[in-house]
Image (spheres, rainbow, N blue to C red):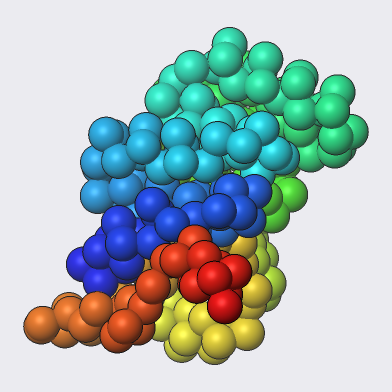
Length: 221
């Protein structure tokens, strides 16, 4: 984790393709900050990913919901639906009213909230985050991921159940988006009891130089 965080700090000043950054590295850094409860870094990762792209909006929606800003999330979902026409956004907008019930085990619609969470894989990180906030018991987390035993939902259900055999098998098979990859990697290392290596290596190649310098050198030639 220390290597990944240091790498982020080293490369961010030299990023010139911000849309690509907001598609991968920015959301991944947000996910790591969320796991560590580092809200200041969450804010910064969002600022670093601010490109007004779909992935930028997606990150803003996830953040708003995880911080209980449901009206903001609704406006963002409307904006995303209008701009990109993704059915997933309209389905989550319709579900927003049930999130308080999901978070409250004593709510009359708690069961409905668990069973009816939209099954789109783009909301896996959000689902896991809400489950952690609600401190849902294992059986309810499995229901939240629709009792799946394979695919992206299946790996989250396996993580919740601490089913190491199935978790290991899915870990090498299932393709996930950046935020989910960070979360599942963290859960995998935690469940496997893998120690953090010390010291953690620098991920930046030795002698790496900013692309701007390389371009200037070529222009001079």
